[in-house]
Length: 539
Image 1 (cartoon, helix red, strand yellow):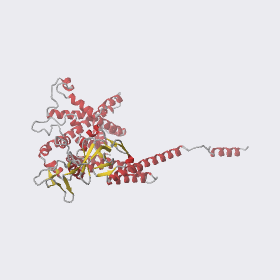
Image 2 (cartoon, rainbow, N blue to C red):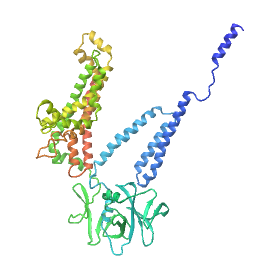
Image 3 (cartoon, rainbow, N blue to C red):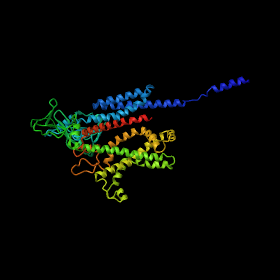
Image 4 (cartoon, rainbow, N blue to C red):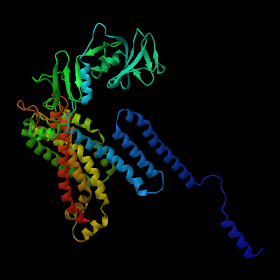
């Protein structure tokens, strides 16, 4: 064989690949990705289909449209190989909308209502409860064997009365919307009582007692009146003495011919007669316009302490940010020096306060400040009532927040320092800017480029740092002449006490306060970001 033939044979042997059975690694990855994609889209569409009947049944059209819109967007984005940027932008946008934008809009919407204790139900439900509470039992009132069921929560409902007429054996299902015959093929009836229903969970005696608040006033409207429970296992059909006129929006007492109209008393609406007497203390959620916002700025209980608490809030947030930043930076500079041995050990020890859950740390520090048994007084030999005076309590809050916050700043500053190129420091040293001068002119400005936005966000966090105040001092100390405003209260803790105090939960008012604090924090953050733009020239 010639040399030329050997060369051809060698070339042939090199160019002919060896065939292997099965998929190559890229092909397997592609198949796996396709399976995951199909499974994900199947879950999304299946969830939308499963939720559709219940949303239609409850007239939740907004959520129905939103769910199908999300399903359509996800399907259009991931079903094809096109629109590659959207595959990364859509998840973040949806999360931002669902967990940030929607809660803000919902809070803003609630702030224009009187929603809270005593006004959690809508007007239609409240009227049904008022009218249902007037049911009167007569000698000829039909009686039923009762079983109470729910296809939701055992304590909040919605509830259904499953009724059996012992005289005829007829079975019915009753809701707040009315009475309907019960499909006996889906129910089990024993001894003239419903014992099981498909899709429903029947309540026992303990369950009924636990749901007493939700079942109070619950009646089933009928042509002759309404059906009301008489205990746990029986019910009767009585006549209602109150009649609601939807066109006139009035309730009439058929016994006395008294007409009750809607009148606002305080921040709640009630049905009252001409003398102002209520037919019931039952109210409902209503639109109150800007009343909650007016209350924030004009209510004397709030406005008289607002300025002082606002100033302390700004001081608290500012000192917390500056102190934690300076201490964290000092530790970061020290441990960033290559001459320091055991850097990993020191760094692990310094982030320990950051690793401990905040509420545990705050409760421990609250015990440390105890006058008689606290660790601080025991170690120093002092007898200071740290949380009993405004000045010492504020110092305790700032000290505790410093201990909890400096590890975060230490980590941030460590990362920022290590990201600064060493050649800049060496060049500064050659030019004579070594030591503190090099840090002030080179290192610190470059560090602020990275850290400044985090300082702004930390300020916003501390501006509304409710846990640090509530778990440590509960806003105190309080003076006898002003039990609503404490010495360490910041705006969020002060307004929460007013909104959820002895008068019950005023969620509409609390939402208005949240919107006001959101605007204040946003304005302060915008001003701070405006000044941090000057750092962009450093690069």
